[in-house]
Image 1 (cartoon, rainbow, N blue to C red):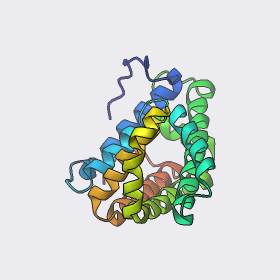
Image 2 (tube, helix red, strand yellow):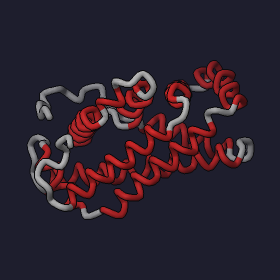
Image 3 (cartoon, rainbow, N blue to C red):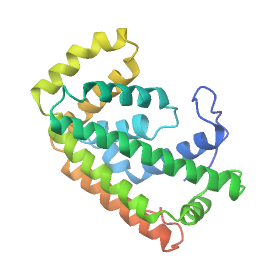
Length: 221
């Protein structure tokens, strides 16, 4: 895995430590899921996760808009859709907290100048949050299953199309475009079970390898 971090975080909106961490994690995920990215069925979903969920970009405005819209839509959305939104917001907060702790461990406590597989794995272990990481993986799978059902609903697709113009006029364009890309990615899969099961299995295996102290836990099997 390449460890060249000469790229500038200018324009990302992230602090340099968070940018470097997000960039490294995106590269790692790109390698772990290269087969899915190359798939006609799962490629769009893989790229969506890499760019819109884990990419080295500050998504705070989009996330804040999501929190605000969810609060206003609580009484209007079907229970299942509302539950999916609430789970997504919780997962995002959990992930942000885990990444903040990992970045602090790497760059402040360990004094890492650039991330490699060994320093990343060591920082992961030192954070000592195995249970939270397991919860994160489980939530990704559960949320994906929920969304796979919700996005198939014709009224959800219609509502999203109708909201495009008003959302942009209301300053919610970033959130709207994110939702549109996400729905399109899930629809392209025509069933997300294999994709979600693969992510859960691989991430759980990598987590266990890291905590077991295995050398090069990210090496392909």
